[in-house]
Every structure is written in structure tokens, then in C-alpha cells.
Amino acid sequence: MRAYLTALAILLSAAAPALAAPPDCEALIAYSEARDGLSLLVLIDGRPACEAYAQGAAATTPLPLYSGTKSLVALMAAAGVEDGLLSLEEPAADTLAEWRQDPAKSRVTLRQLLSMSSGLPSRIGDVPTYAAAVEAPFNAAPGERFQYGPAPYQAFGEIMRRKLSVSGQEPDPLAYLERRVLQPAGAAAAAWRRGADGQIMMPQGAAMTARDWANVGEHVRAHGMLYRELFVPSEANPAYGVGWWLPNRGPGAVTASTDLGDGGEAIPRDLVMAAGAGDQRLYVIASRKLVIVRQARLDLRADHRWSDAEFVGLALKITSP
Image 1 (cartoon, one colour):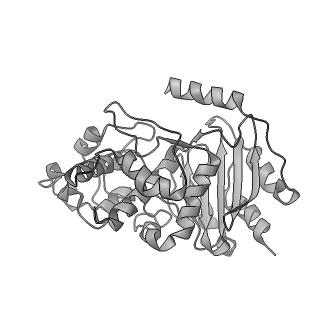
Image 2 (cartoon, helix red, strand yellow):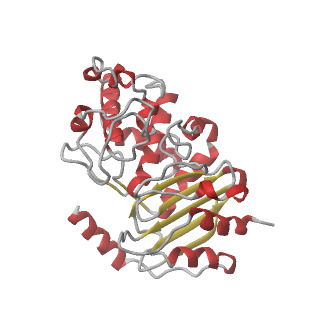
Image 3 (cartoon, rainbow, N blue to C red):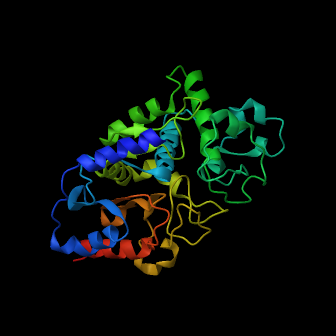
């Protein structure tokens, strides 16, 4: 982790100066940069409308997505559905034979794992190995409780690894994600951390430039029907679907709370959001042909209140007639 952060610091220190911002973007940029913002990119119908960088960052600077990584994993799951590799409604125990005799684990679906309502608890920031996640005991019935954390995504990583292996494909979920999602989107992960088991960290490991992350958002906007099942809220948390946050009220999470549900009619109902610690954000609003990336320096000590509702409100003014 230390080496990863050191490399990130070198990238930041070597980056080019920030670009000048058009006048109609100034309020949006100011809001982000006042809260440790490093990059901001707004696409309207695929074309850049606002782009700005701060604190030494540049368009070529990859930054950690933290839990925004979960949304990439959800897109991988959707690709798996399209390929007939999996179903969101199938029991995880169809693949994890060690779960079949457990009365709770045997009933968990892949959708519940990825909506973090499976009953599998975890501690934020403590990413277990795939094997440890699979072996961990449940503390709630499937579908009963929203429990934000890394363990369910690590368990899904083991499921993907096994499914890919059985289907004769390279058993590395990252290779599948790159081939099926990132490359078609014209995007790349500049880095992706791996755990002690050598497997990619499914809940928080990716780093991307603002432009690459925006390309992912454009891909989601252009292929909304393919990903629509990811944006169905869970019963345990109406503000969360499968790896993506939704503009509904619900219980938040320590590293990715959102007030989108308090934004009222001003927030488009089709908005979906990838979110990570430090207020890393990717917003996709298909009805406004809008994709927004906001990346920031992670400083958990900073007292900078972030409001998704306020930020999105400022962004929507850019698209207003």
C-alpha cells in the first residue's frame, strides 16, 4: 500500500498545470476543488463540456477509485449475464460448494452478494482474501440487512474465478473485465491492487484517469438496457442497486454516504452513481446525456462536507437551456 501511494505522489508531483475552465463551469469546479478535488470532467452527449485539474493532477494522472471499483465489478457481472456465464438470481452455492450445507449461505443469490445484503459482514478497509471471505460466517439472514464492506465482493471474486476456469477462460476476473467491459468502453485501469492471495481486490483496487472513468460512464449511458438490472434497488437499501448508488433515501455507509435521496425532484430519477472514499464520483444521467467524473485527494481528517445533491444541482445548470 505504501509503495502504491508513493507512486501516486510521484505522478501528482510530475503532472502538468491545471487547465483553464470555461466560465459556465466555474461554480462546479470551485465546489469540487474547495473539497480537495483533483480532477473534474463533464461530458455532454460524449463531448467534454468542462475539464479541470488541481493540486498537480492532470488528464494523464490515474487516481484511486476506492469503492468506485465496486461499480466496475458490477459491470463485469452484467457482462457475465450477457455471456451466459451467470445469473444475478442464481444461488452463490451453485458455484461455492462449501456453502451448500449452510442454511443461510445456501440461499444467498449473486444479486444479494453484490447489493451487500447477503448477510456476510465485513469491516470497511479490511479486505479479506477470496478464501477468507468465502469462509467467513454470516451474521444476518439473506436480504435482511444492508452491510457495506469488502467481503461480499471478495466472495464474488472467488465465484468469478471458478466460473471463468470451468468455462475454459483465463481465471483472472481482471482479464475478463478488461476484455468485456473496459476495452469496449475505450477505457483502461492504470493500476489494480491485488491481495495477499494474488487476486485482484474486487471492492476497492482500481485506479483510473478521469478520462478513462468517464469513458466507462459513457459506455453505461450508451448501453443502459444491458445494465438496467444493476440499477434495481435492493429491499435492504433502496439507495443501492448492484454496485451502483441510486437517488433514493436509504442507510448510508462510512466511506460512501450520499444525500441524493434528499435532492427531491431536482435530481433526475435515472441518475446512477459510482462512489468511493474521499468523495470519488462517477455520475451517469442518461436523460440529460450527462456523465460527470470527480476525483479527489483522500484526506479522512478534512472537514469538507460533500453533498451529491448540491454538486449534481450545479452540474445540471450546465446542461440547462
